Image 1: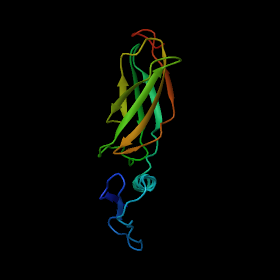
Image 2: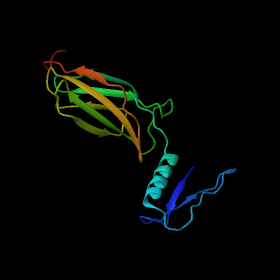
Image 3: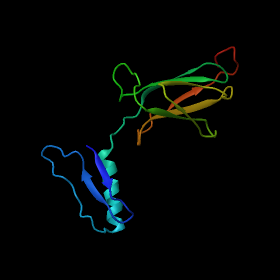
Amino acid sequence: MTYKVSSGTLRHYSLIHSPPLHGCPKILLPPRPLSSQLCRASVVAVRQTGSRNLPAPVDLHTSPLSAHSVRLHWTDPSLDHTQRIVDERYYNVYYHAVPHGKNLSVIVKALHVTLHDLEPGRRYRFKVRTVKGDHTSPFSGVATERTSTTDHGQY
């Protein structure tokens, strides 16, 4: 379903249903001044009606690569079994050192990322969400990983 807001000024809105769906009435509000309260409610309704719920990424896995880097990868349940990205979606990856690290984030257009410049021997928490157009998924589950203490060994 697509809804449009047309002839919009702060206090004047007409909502039209485009294209009309079989068996559904055309939605038209009178093109007269409406209270700003009603206008805000109308705009919210248009956004909610047109939104698609994106599921949160799942199966977030981490692998420590060195004292300064960790690799993350996940699955996007809104993609088909090939997990091939063919649209404008991207992923927000949020992470911080535990217990009191600075909140950091990166944007990636793949189902994996390697994070560098981490502190040796520190535990980090990671979470991911999908962004597609104006739609944002909930966060994935949190994954925790510790970087190794040296670049030559694990932990």
